[in-house]
Length: 227
Ligand SMILES: Cc1cc2nc3c(=O)[nH]c(=O)nc-3n(C[C@H](O)[C@H](O)[C@H](O)COP(=O)(O)OP(=O)(O)OC[C@H]3O[C@@H](n4cnc5c(N)ncnc54)[C@H](O)[C@@H]3O)c2cc1C
Image 1: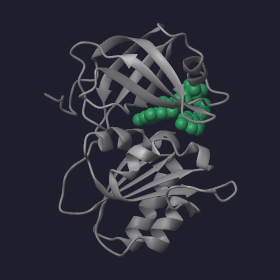
Image 2: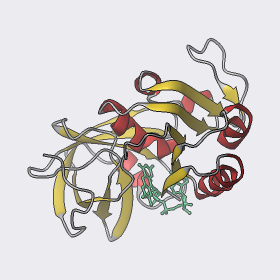
Image 3: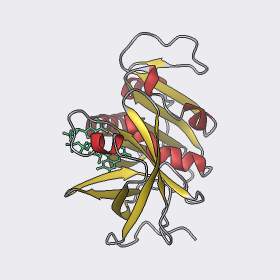
């Protein structure tokens, strides 16, 4: 049975690194052992505790999988993420969790998922569990950062990568919007009442929330800010 999002935050666990796979030039996926009795709901996160540092990471794996996976951007200069990128297979990590309430809430309103960068992580876990949104926007700088595109494309009626920089992507299997996620919503999302799920940069969350107030009144907004 899946854990409720209200699970106490004091749950402490240990896990080992099983593998590290680079998804793009600056972002990697860590595969980790899953402690016995650790359960979570898609969209939830864990808090890594390492060398006195505490950092949150959303799970990209599903509750049905035998291992845990995280999608992590190596922030330069960052304290923990470069250590994780260089960590040896077999290294042991402590964490607490699951934490958070950024979970899918079925409703009569169509769901619009909006992510920037690694903010796509909770949506990957939801998609792998069969959650289907009307629209899913993934804002990144360049096409090389469109990790998980194949999973996401099948989980939404409209998967729209939004590139804010770089040259037009050539030979892409899906249509790409050149601009920010806010511009796409402003120009292409039909008027209506939606459930917006926003995850990633604080600036994006602020800008989309203001836009929703103006253009999509009556909509609900759920948010998870990474930084
Ligand atoms: C609820 C929550 C969930 C999160 N989930 C994820 C996740 O799934 N994947 C992930 O990569 N990060 C995630 N983060 C961010 C993560 O917790 C760390 O902040 C990040 O890994 C940087 O840690 P650091 O110690 O390397 O850098 P630090 O030394 O702590 O910070 C360096 C600077 O990097 C900036 N920064 C932080 N995160 C990012 C980022 N992703 N991209 C660009 N700049 C950043 C911050 O503004 C900070 O000033 C999440 C944060 C929160 C609050």
